[in-house]
Image (cartoon, rainbow, N blue to C red; front, side, top):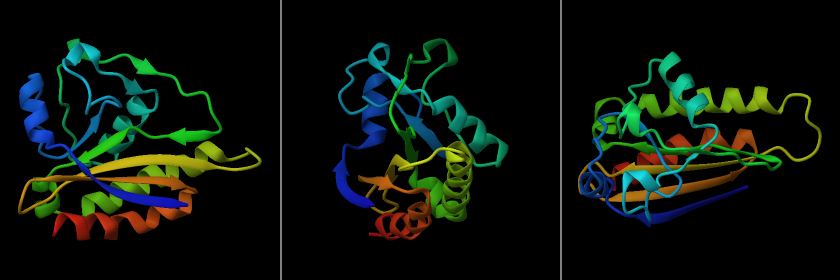
Length: 164
C-alpha cells in the first residue's frame, strides 16, 4: 500500500484556460487533465460513469466540468486492479462540510469491495484525489495504490492537506 502526495497545477486556472466549468463540490477529472490543451483531448477512465452514479446516489455535491455534449471518450483499463477516476475536491466543499469526503470515499470503498468479491489473488485499487487548499487555493494530489481497506486513512490526510 502506498500513498504519495505531490504538487498539482491550479485546477481553477486550468479549467478557465480550457473553457470548463469550475465545480463547487466533487468533480471527476480526466486522466490527462494536466497535459490536455483542449477539451477535445480529454480522456476518462471507464469507471468514471460508475463513480458519478455512486456519488449522486449518496447525495454528494457533484459538479461536471464540461457539457454533456463534450463528454470525453472512456479508456478501458484491462488489468487486475480497479482504477478509479481522479477525484477533485474543491475548497468550497471542504470548508462547507468536510464529512462529504469521508462519505464519498466510503461509498467508493464499498463499491470496490463488491467489485472484488469472488476474485482471488491481489485486489488492488488505484485512486487519485486532487485537493484544493482552503486558504491558498493551490492544489495537491494524493495518489493511493493498495487494498480497499487502506482508503479509510485518506479522509484524515485530505483534511490535513486542505488546512495547510
